[in-house]
Length: 249
Ligand code: 2F8
Ligand code: CA
Image (cartoon, rainbow, N blue to C red; front, top):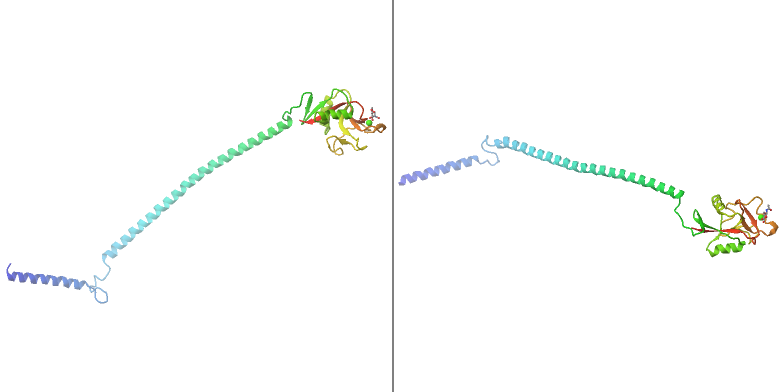
C-alpha cells in the first residue's frame, strides 16, 4: 500500500469513527432525560405490543395454575369424603349387627332367667332328705319329745323346720306321716311369746294355727305341732311326736 493510500484509509476510518460517534451522540438523551429524537422518545413497539402480550400470557398461566390447584384440592377432598362414606356405612352396619346381637342376648338372658325361675338348678340333698326350693327336709321315722327331736336335728347340723309360706306348708304336708310332727316353734321361754328356732320373726311371719289355738291347755302347752291336716296346735313338749328337720341346700 502506498503512503497516500494509507492516509486516505486512515482518514476514511477516522471519518467512520466520527460518524459512529456522531450517531451515538445523537441517541443520547439531553440533560432533562428526554430523547432528543421525538419519535424514539415515545413507547417502543416492544412496550406497546410485547409487554401486554406477556402480561396476558402470564395471566393465563396464573389462572391455569389456580384452576389446576383448585381442581386438585377438590379431588383430594372428594377422596376422603368417599372414604368417610364407606367407613360410615361400615360403622352403621356394625352398629346394626351389634344391636341385633344385644337384642338376641337379652332375649336369651330373659329366657334363661325365666327357665331358672321355673326350674331352679338342682340342689343335692342327702339321702332320706327331700328338697323344696333352697332347703332340704328330713321327716323322722320315729317319735320323740320336743327337746330330743330338736337335739336330733342339731346332731345333723340342722334345726326343726321353720314354715315360712303356704307353699312350703303344702310341700311338707305331702311328706308327713299319719300323725303330728314337731316344728321349730315354741313359747317355752315366756308364755305367749312364740319364737321360731332360727330367729325368724314370729309376728310378721305366716301362721297356720288351728281354730282357737294356741290355747295353752292346762297351762302346759309350750311346743307347736303340725297336725295331720296341716294346721298347728300347741301341745305339751314332753309328748312324743314325729318331727321335721330343715336345712339350707
Ligand atoms: O293334746 C292336746 C290337745 O288336745 C286337744 O286337741 C286334740 C285340744 N283341742 C281343743 O281343746 C279344741 C288342743 O288344744 C290340745 O293341745
Ligand atoms: Ca293346744
